[in-house]
Length: 252
Ligand SMILES: NC(=O)c1ccc[n+]([C@@H]2O[C@H](COP(=O)([O-])OP(=O)(O)OC[C@H]3O[C@@H](n4cnc5c(N)ncnc54)[C@H](O)[C@@H]3O)[C@@H](O)[C@H]2O)c1
Image 1 (cartoon, rainbow, N blue to C red):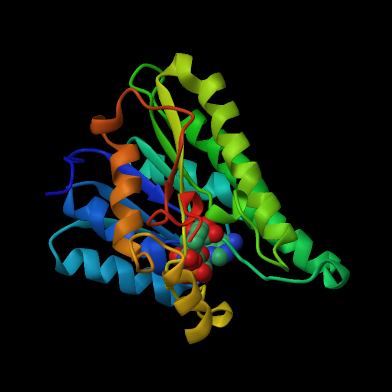
Image 2 (cartoon, protein in one colour):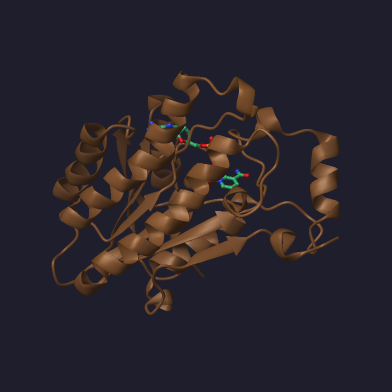
């Protein structure tokens, strides 16, 4: 059974697809009121409908959270509508892999805006929205790319390593307010977003180098996000859990 999130309000950025969607469904199963955010209205509508049909509670938030203003509208708007905010999941990303010589200013800016700056804005707004005594939990999506790199990942690896630093720094600053900040660093997980960079040979190589012998699933990651957001991890803060089937600790 998912942890008990009855009465709690959760916002997940970029939850129209992939890991964010799976996380939204799991929080809803646990009884949370889930703020489903995405850029794309049709994605938001579909996830909200899925949660409604399963008997859960969801609030759709169509918003571009790459800007400080957009993030504030999403976070503070949900807190106002639902009456509180307990959990913030900084999940949304836009990713392109480019060789160093090819990195273009527009790509770098767009990746930084949603991948890095939005995490800072998300933490800032969530800390404002969370109750002064009750506190809350923030979970950021890092990546094994922040620990080990492949070619053409200078921007993505830099951003995801940065997310681990942001997680530690925010945990230090917000701990006194009862706000825990943690991250999960997934290995390769097939999603709509990763489809364009994956192929059968690359997957096979990855699987051969993974002690557990498989790629991750969106549910593998959703479970860890829920663990980091719930009372079962009440004494954990500033930590990044690497969820990669052992890929980064292996020398296979
Ligand atoms: N899938 C993987 O293999 C993997 C591995 C490691 C880390 N991650 C991280 O996990 C997170 C989720 O990855 P995914 O593969 O599920 O992604 P995805 O691309 O499948 O989904 C991301 C969602 O975010 C939304 N989004 C993008 N920009 C937005 C914006 N400005 N405002 C609101 N929504 C926006 C997209 O529309 C999309 O629905 C990302 O942070 C990613 O870097 C994924």
